[in-house]
Length: 290
Length: 341
Image 1 (cartoon, rainbow over the protein chains, first blue to last red):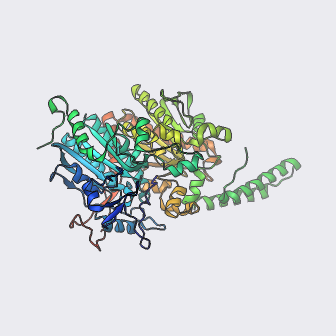
Image 2: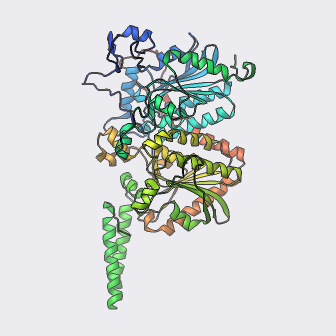
Image 3: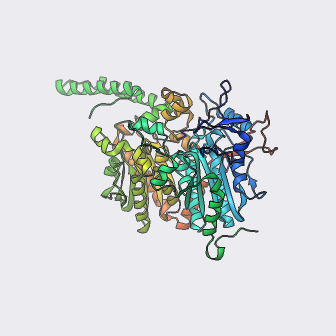
């Protein structure tokens, strides 16, 4: 399932292929424009020339969405265990160490409570730079906790996804996270509470086959790759040419999965407006515990 | 039917052929070969035992995919009566890769739903080799909701290499179809029982697999990814599938240890395809035993137990709190004794 897990590739010998190198300048993947890194950051990591949305880290995304100083992260210390003693070309425990060193995170998702334009929300943000944001036990557990906390406090939950799918290294336990997270959303929905799913580049496989697809509203960033199977797998299986723009946000809006495509700079205000609409009669539908 | 033999089955097949020849010879020429026959029979049993008590995970995967392995409809023929198949998702089509309908097992009325593979090329084209499209999952959900409405328990037979990776499947949102099933099954107010009878191929299997009890046949497997797919990504070569199969811990025994399945149903020596009737009888016994237990439970208890069953899946740990935000050069993920949630 984890189609993109190996990208971006971490290699010790070859030159590092980060989207945003720590250098002063970065080349836009789409239009080739050379952009001053500081400028790119100031522009929500969107290319000013062609609107290409660069990948954001979870911390950057949280800073963009949460009202200043309101985000309270929880469970940052949850970490994966090499439960299967995964043996192969790459040892899982070694990989975890590498990604921890590179990202400072213990796994691929950041969760916590925040205010978004004054609304209390439970927020979960996935970080593609940690092992392709593949979902193992920790991601599944933290997403579930974020949902359950929202249900308990009677507040909305917002999940910003990016993922290559279920994490192979934890085998069947990774697959079971699909059931666990979707189950938590079932109870959240039964409590009449909103869930907004935000899909960013790329979100595929296991995450799409669970919470990614289950939002009351599903928002996608422009031109994100979104789907179940990877394009290469589909091509190989079906021996078919893939349609133009296949598995992009735009394609999925046309095909009826995505409610709306929102430019990153409008994301916060769109979320705020939706939360307002979902807050029920006289805005009392959900209310945070003070 | 064409004889199909897996590499490791060959010594068995050879002995079986010898035995058949001897018996034929004895009958034809009316001579007493019982001593020879007996010797071969004993050798056959011993060989079977030797091979089948030491199966590697990869050999089990091959057995699970054996073209002669019994499929859902083979079992229904043997354990159920008055089957009425119900077709279609009421939205787009009837997916032949998933079969569903009402039937009786002894005196229990049940809804059965499961992936169905084909026996030959023509049938396989119709069944899409047991790989469902979104319509299959939507049909499955419709039938489960129908079962819930009329207080009928549901039995799901899982046997798929995976949900179909195709253009149409993506266009009609196969991921969404599976996700909705996972969510809806969690709160469905009727007992749900799943049996992995062959291949438990990832999300395509789980899409009808969120159940109160999950049973598995001895040589079936259930995995997050196919061994070949895993090998292609991690080893960069599909030829390493055997190693991937071992690494993924996908056998019935592994799954029982990981608490992902509740019970392993034994197969005849040599695999389910060696004796359909015997396998079906074991399957039926296990199904009825579990179904009756679930049937006795109060719905609220059933739903609570179902949620908890999946809620506690996953293994993780807590690391020492340290300065966040910036990665320390030599910081390592500390993994003390694994704690289960």
